[in-house]
Image (cartoon, rainbow, N blue to C red):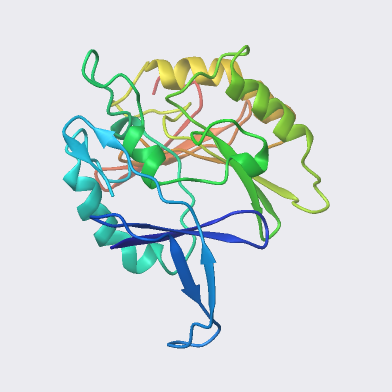
Length: 244
């Protein structure tokens, strides 16, 4: 059993679990430990990936049983607090000619509340929590100005009421700014920044979190911005745009 929960709207949660064999999608619950007088029925789905049939999260990278070991590893935390996730390059798992559909395992196992925010894809969505509007973007799906993701983001940002959610946080995988020697010049960073950065700037987004590069770095947007990086245990700063 691999259980995780996620937010679905401001007053609901989704409980998901993975089993080896088919079972009823019925959840019993209550307000006291061991006493579960209520129940709710949900949907059961399955998927096939190459020879695997189911009942930068797992780093499975095509090795499907690693999704299961990862699910069991995080269950103690993911079953207690909502886990709101977005995909990375290790979740693509597309094999030309053999398995052409990307994100099969990710979309099947980690269903996020994309419909509630008007999105048509599990790869990008938004939600509100504790005065914050959180936007989860997909670095590895279409993001050009004529794409569905771009059009959705444009409309989503326009709907934000800063009186209700005074803070806006955006989460991506591939960073738009990166002084590390790894992952330089990648399309998902360079082109996505070119396409979407102005939208975030005009909406006065407060914070953007990115992954992909396994090092700590932060920057402040603006002409006098400075990068602050921690790599290999060393702390250093430099002005943005500097060659130093």
